[in-house]
Figure 1 (cartoon, rainbow, N blue to C red):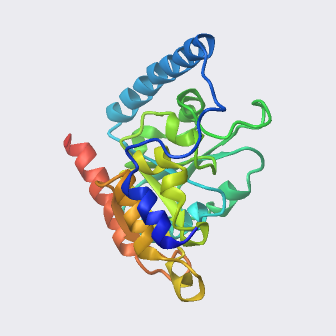
Figure 2 (figure 1 turned 60 degrees about the vertical axis):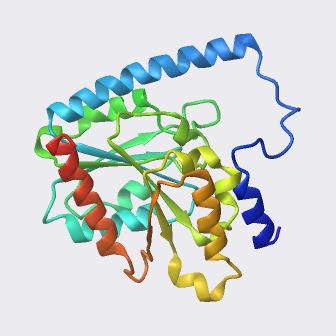
Length: 251
C-alpha cells in the first residue's frame, strides 16, 4: 500500500474499513463480554481509588512487542529517579527479562506474568494490576508506570485504573498502523513516536503516519523520541511530570 492510499483510507476512518462479514457476534458472546468488562471496570475503579488515596499518578504504557517500551522506561528512570518516586508494574507473558532490565534505577518494581492464562494473556486487566499493588509501596510513590504486555489490540480494551494512557509506536512498524489498530491509537492520550533516529534509513512516510493518526485520534499529543540517542526524552519526561502534577492537583 502506498502512502497516498494509506492517507486516503485514513480520511474516511469514520466508515467501516475492510470486510467484516466473516465475524459475527452472537447474543451469548455479547453477554459474556459485558460481564467480563463490567467486572474489570469495578476493579479498575477500586484501583483508581487506591491510587488517588495514595496520591499516586498512574500511566498505562502500551505498544506492540519490540516498539521500545522497556528501553524508554530505562532512560526515563535514569533521568527522573532523583526527582520522582517511581514504581513500575511490569507485564509480560513469561520471564522477568524486562523487569530485570529496569532494576538498579531506584524504582519499585512489581512483575505480573500472564502465562497462566489461555496460551498467555495478551494484556493486563484491572484484576492483574490489583494483584501487583500489595508489592508496591504506594504511599511512598509519586508515579507508577504500567508497562503493559506488548500487543496492539487487547491492552487498549481494558481500563486498569490509570490516570493517563501513552503508547509507544516505532516507525519500523509502518505508517498504516493507526488504521489497522484504531482502538489502540484512539484511546491514547499521547503517542510516543520512537526510533526516530532510524528515519533516514527507512522507507517510511512520517507525514502519512501523522495523517492516519489524526484521522483516528485528532486530539492525541505526539512526541518524537529516540530512546537510543536521547532525542525527545526530555519532552517525554516533562509530559510525565505534568501528568503527575495535574493528577495530584485534581485537574
